[in-house]
Length: 551
Image (tube, rainbow, N blue to C red; front, side, top):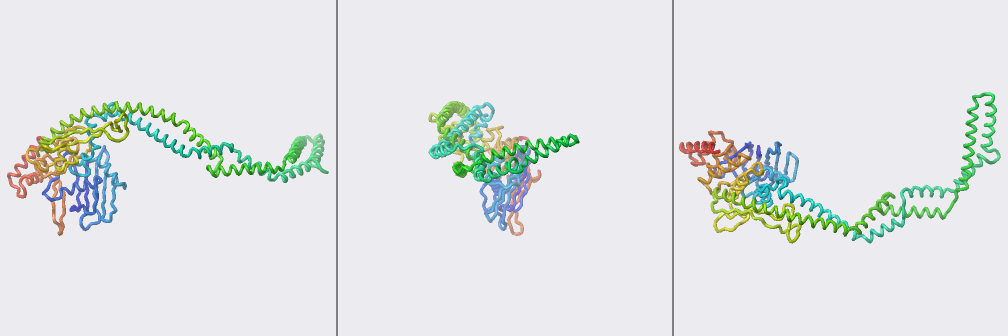
């Protein structure tokens, strides 16, 4: 609910800090005092249009802040409009688009009257209200069962759409895809092949040098005039003989024997290596050509051999999709058909529940409207078949069922039914809103309801009925009402007076929270006018006592 409203430099208001309470909050004042300014400020806060004309003369910016309590948490909305056009919106002091204030505001406040924020002017909300009244939000209700099936239907339809889009894209590029796959197939590139070819290429390019190195090394070890192996053998023999005289040389003699064997193997390997290294120009050209092919394909398909192999896999999958598409599409279509039959069956159950609840709601709201000073008014809950979205057997259906709902009213005798948005009088619209809220009873809505012009065109006994209904509604939620009728104001839990004052040559609108004695005076003023008589004061006290007993 709205706990505090702060207004700075807005129209005639220079500075106003209004703390609002639970129950029924009444705002009253003389005609022209500026009561409508508060509603304009609240509309701005809830995402309404901002205009530099709303900024107080002589100021550059206007600011409205609302502090709400919702679900045990505080929620702050702030709106700033500027003459330079740099308007700003804040949600919990975080900059947000104005649409975010509007979306949040719809959850926090129901504003009754001819205002942009009026929920009754949005047919989408009519369906929500009817379903709430019918208990369609409960588990295992017709609507909950329908929505569960529709979620499956929507997911499957989305899957089919993705499949068709991918298949369509693949078909458009099929020839090119097949060319790419054929190119990679024919290349038969293997993981690690490029590295092996590069090594072989280096060896082949330096074959002469490598062969000469092998031959020279073999000669030095085991050929020539005085090979290394011959010297090692001689030294090993001498040390072996010496070890007979000193046992400490035995280990060294063993190591020399081992070294001789190792060097003998090395010499044999180098000899074979030198003879095996060959300079084959044809093989070198083959390697060069193969590396060039790999390079071209890498450049075309991703820069690495791994990317080539992954691309080949993707191409096979895309082309396989074309081969499997018809079978997969047929399977999905079959499942969609089954779900459509379920949805139509469940949707008809939802429609029956809505029709029954709609008739009951019509009766309750019509009765309430008549009691609120519209004795000739008729109210209707019009169910209209959907004409858009998915369809099966010629019947359209959507996430919320087979129909849309619109509340309609005929305010006067001889008039046909019209959508609520066609009602010319803001007062009539406010009373219809009050009747709907009364008829809906405990159905949850916004925690704060604001009524503007609810007393327009009524008086006497009807005003008292309106006041009692507002007080009754205020038992379950916060109600804010602007009124000029004492029969309504006397039911307030919190009463605020709006007045104009002139200070330093400038007119200002101010808001004052009234104490009990001040309330009596304000009720008396509303009864008698400018001149408050003793009789008006006595009448005011009696009205306040009667309202207290009645509430």
